[in-house]
Length: 402
Image 1 (cartoon, rainbow, N blue to C red):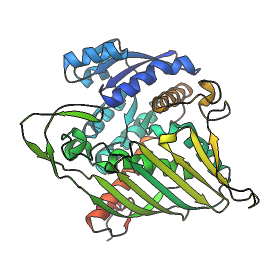
Image 2 (cartoon, rainbow, N blue to C red):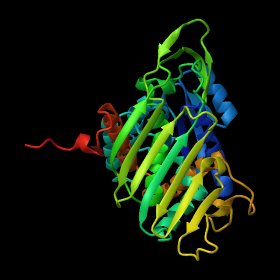
Image 3 (cartoon, rainbow, N blue to C red):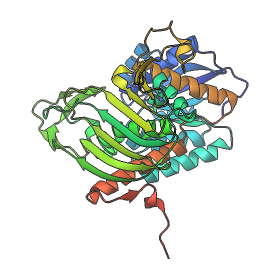
Image 4 (cartoon, one colour):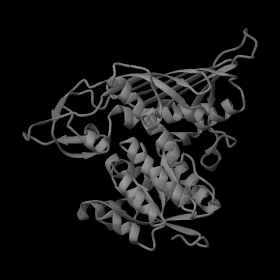
């Protein structure tokens, strides 16, 4: 159990690939830029290969390495378990860590199934009564421009929300000869574009508007059904395994759905890894009765705002460079106009989690929030399986009628 009088919290990270590198950078830098009630100590990381884990620990700044995540949980010098592994392992690791009294930060999506997410949320609620905190890693909430967008909506600057349009467009598997990495395996990833990047726009839309998706009508598709087996992968890249043959893609390449928000707004969502020429375009536009907002992650320091109350002679979308000291998170970094990047969102995430632990408050997004996003993903999958039939979010867990 964590000693509440300690000023340092030991972190144990499970996984050290793409997300592990991003999280490592956050733990290394967060206390240098933010005044925190608790300071992280990068105690150990865990990976299946001893050789690779030791090399990663040395490169990324961790004091030691383990080959079994259970050993991280057993260590008295580890207070936080940071889960950066594929989705098929999230539930087992998170529940075990919470039951051992460790705070847990878990990458998104929370799990591969609603059932797993329910078990994780229930474990988090039980642990919460003992002061143990947990959070899901929807890092894009920590983009200053999106956090500012949420504030503008909450302040009423957009009036009543009418439309939400969300896209996440990538192209990294457009080549049919790109190898069969774990993100294309349903057993490991749970789903494809839907869970990997669709989960981000679901959370971003709900975060900014303060509303939830109530129901969906969806289509999903897989454009390349077989790919060369992968020899090794890193980040979103991979090397083909020579002449070892090909394997079947078992996830979606793209997901498209419409939905209704809890405040009555109509919404559309598109997640694809086949948008040729779009590298990492998370786009969000919100139209309200009094104004509009527009954001694109490929220009992540900018937010476009239209004030519908202005005189029509000069009204128009205006570009806000979200780097002023008054803007969310920005004041801790560089002088005005000096831009932030992708990696800063993970530092902001670590900062918010450490503050919640140190002040004994509930971090956001919680595992319950992660479960709600999982229920949206589930509704999308079920709707697509029924040729787009309207499907209520959460009805897979509703009790059967007598």
